[in-house]
Image (cartoon, rainbow, N blue to C red; front, side):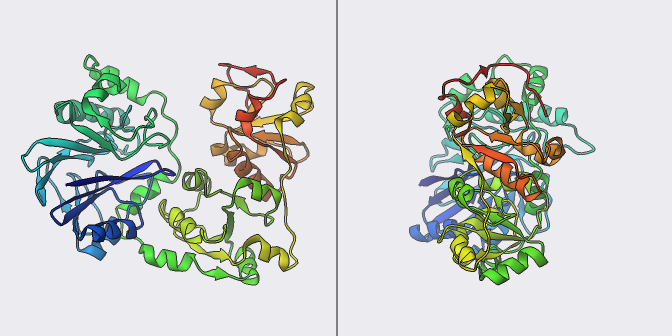
Length: 469
């Protein structure tokens, strides 16, 4: 028996590979199929089933592609409806994988089709449970993403309470909990950095599993403090119910090497967005005018999905050499399938063609502290409101990055602003978007609030209501 958690940090997502006696299954796969097929081939195993815990909102799954390539059967729980062939499993239905048995537990609440999968060993003993977005480590799935005309978030929360107590909390305490997400995912609000745990320990530390909690208390607590979900979530749900462009075709189109003239023509004539995925220090030094920074080594895909409203937006890429396919793959994971290619030779080729570049002024916190204290600096903190409330520079105003499109007009093109986030990644995204729309008097504060805290002279304020633009 083999159980492997395949964790993808940028999405805080866990897929699972299980194998026994030459038969394998995949639970909650990402868009790309090669890693799962290659893993099974390494074991000389055949992928028999692809199990989905629910229709995911935060990424596009590759279940249809994977089934087409392997002959595996796609399985969803009760209430699932989709445009492709799949097996609708019933509550309690069992599936054989070699010597193992996988039992479906219907656990509505996060969504109405949400299901967990209990793995039984060859003796029939409960080994572990794959809980999807029903139960996380330290949290439970948010019940506000599948609200419809016939069911409210309170109704979904009620279902979730019942599912946890009737299906999961009755399992033995030594059963291992394997969720679909960890800390950093927007599918919950209090997830642990740990990616698995025993059920018994979760009963002790997870607020939502308190034995003395009433249903009314659960509904109130699970719905309190939920941030608005990213805008791309509903689009990903729809894609996960549909037959989408094959990943191989997306990669083929998106990894075309474009010469400078073709690249420029796509940007000017076809409305393609230039996304620069290099490190923020490289971008601030020099970049193509009008390009938007989304560094591949930060929270790349979720920020693209949050800030690029049109999921069909044509995209052309500036990337470090050798990382072009990675960029296209990670865009496709959240449904941004319309990558048209990358700039061959990158920024070097652009300059060799005699074309101008732009830059962003980046200053150390020590270089602006006197300006801030003398109230000669307009300091803009673009972290989330919860981060700002926790601690911030007293003179700063809060303009969260995720609502930049709504607050952009609150800034003046004639005023200079110093912009910071937590570490220097989000601030460069913010400034690049603003520059692309005609705001050029923005200065990046290198190192963000993390470095500001270490710099003497700033007036820091804790737990004070934020000033807004």
